[in-house]
Image 1 (cartoon, helix red, strand yellow):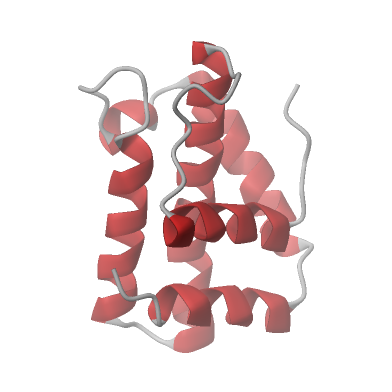
Image 2 (cartoon, rainbow, N blue to C red):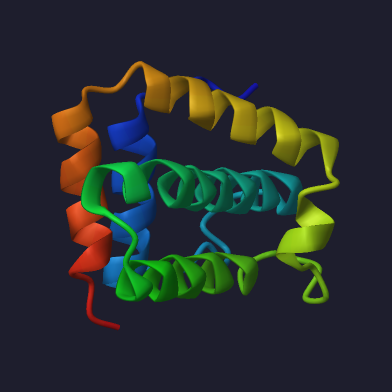
Length: 124
């Protein structure tokens, strides 16, 4: 069962994975568990894309970094033909996305802005 985690935890883990170039491959997770982690990470990125423009303004670099983040997560999905559009039709993804949105609502704006700034300042 997926636990609802504070947005900073979800986003922090997602950003940490990107920054450290961590890979899910064979860390003792089943295929389904690894795919769920990918869905959680992508949902976190999607929520950032929804929340951050109101906090830091519309920014092309931020949009590019979110796209990079999402694509790096999709690369870890077991079905290499998976796309964001396909994923958004997945019932588990919809549930995970809704949990991430709820967590964002419960997170302090200053914490949200800090995560948004981290993504904005990320250099691939």
